[in-house]
Length: 292
Image (cartoon, rainbow, N blue to C red):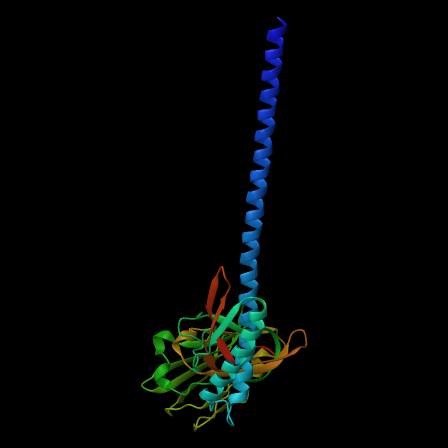
């Protein structure tokens, strides 16, 4: 009888040992999987931050290169000087990234005329806000140098000013009619004026200054009066239907001054490589730059 008792005890101990072993193996396996996931996520986060920093640095380098390459006016930029500046920046950035074990490269791309989309490209966001929470606008001008790149009446381009409730305070519609630029300016409930620019190169349309360069038209856009006493946003509708430039400055609702302009767009391609991964990004950069 004693012999049978001893056998039962051995079986019980063996079963207990097997159970503990399974628990230990399970815990160890979970720890390995958890550590692996943490390492993988850490690698992903590192590459994400690296490329984000590279995009920010390259954007600022493009803005500096643009200022360095201007010959007297924003319409006269030396593309060769611009590329040379970015090539020098790439060499220096590559040296800095090399210290961390990463390989960096940047292809500068070429300066090109911008569409009125969010990122300046033809396939960019059509309807977007240039600046929001504005209190006063000191200067606002646009230019459409090539009427063939402006759409017809069925796809009008609109500059729309809306208050904080989304109501329209002021708007300007532009479209191409047989090579001419037709402009309709409206307030909240009525038309302010209709104008037609007959020159092939319209020059600058000074919205706050009530002027159209290279034209006999004497407009009254009434922008400042219609927006006075409001906090508002300036929006673009159908921006992919026109190529041109804009510049705007004033004060935000917080009292902070701002200025923003776009005369050109460039698309540098950034590449960062490590032993495990290569990340490539092509980023449109508006020049001379965003809100300052």
